[in-house]
Length: 458
Ligand code: F0G
Picture 1 (tube, rainbow, N blue to C red):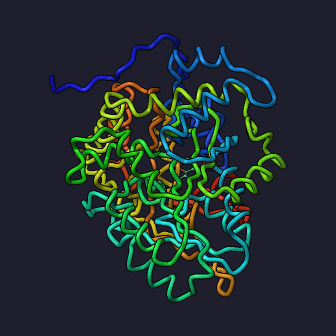
Picture 2: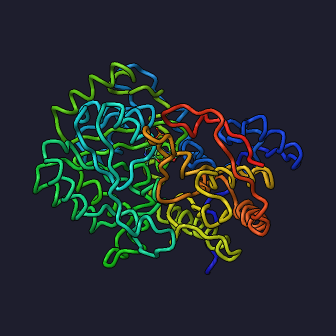
Picture 3: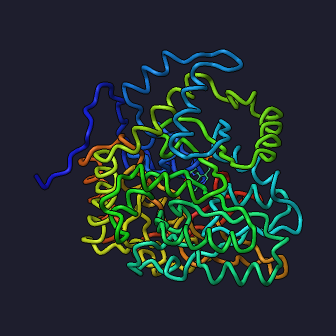
């Protein structure tokens, strides 16, 4: 059989509310043209994020009932710890309430003024947590990773030459760790090859620098390695994921992605002293080391999620259904970051809105039109999220790509939902000349995309 089906059936449904174009126009205005400020019930298809939006399985829900809510040493904690240790081989497992809590602890331990932390591409919270300690966050993705049309199979790879140059330029004592984000969310959800992780490991060994993974989407990365990297097709995604973790000294994970849960995170470490210090920081703001800011039932849900996500049938469906959305858009002439990655399709908004300059925020403008036309919510990954204000000129320094991300929640939408999205975006594309640019009316200095207010340009 050629057809790859959703490998689940639906036991509980959540109705979707239909709205009219006129209603959505008003809703957009009320939300200052920022989809983050739109009430979720007014969204028809919510592709804002794949984070915390997964549908849990019956096994996970059963685990929720079994959750042991003891403060210390709960049964749920031991179950969770065992699953994570078997998967990652890391001796120290710390639960956190989500990925950024792990990042905050990690960078408090390793960051600080004068430090420089390379990554393929730091995700927004990773960059913000790194910079919050006074450290500098540097993106060193390979050049192909910045070109939407390049078909390189591993556009998430960290450039080994750039890494060595950076270490030599700033001095090894200023580089406390190297990070690799799998898959590379800010760079189009693109995977990182095993070969690249091995190469970076060798460089880290040469200079005595620890290597960390930002492993939110480790399972999707592992499956894309299986599909795209030579010599890997015979291995299971689990075996590949285990090798990925074996190459690292630690990892931060937001379980809200490949952990298939609505809340939760993990910090993994190999170093006993750092683990001790991390545990102390965990207690300070998250909770005791055997629950880390979560309920016992959340640990149960994660324990099952981290196993289910490596099911080959699930991963085949997951990766195929993401590609299906990408292929549908390409057929309509929409330019996307190719090849499709794991969790999302990224539209090249600079191409979609060729009539708009980066200062008119083409990505944000497209977001608004997708919502107005079809009730679809997406997120901008471009000048709003990553633009920097030049302190001298007051002008925006633009990032290399203007993208709109359509993130696909796991096990939530069916193929007909995705067909609707393809059709709607095709219609918006046919009328793209009418998309109006936006200007920022009000914005905070850090992580401005969450709360900035915009106005439509005339
Ligand atoms: N690292 C990466 C690569 C991420 O994509 C995210 C979250 C985080 C860290 C932080 O995890 O949200 O649990 O604190 N990404 C979400 C997204 C928000 O929409 O891509 P968190």
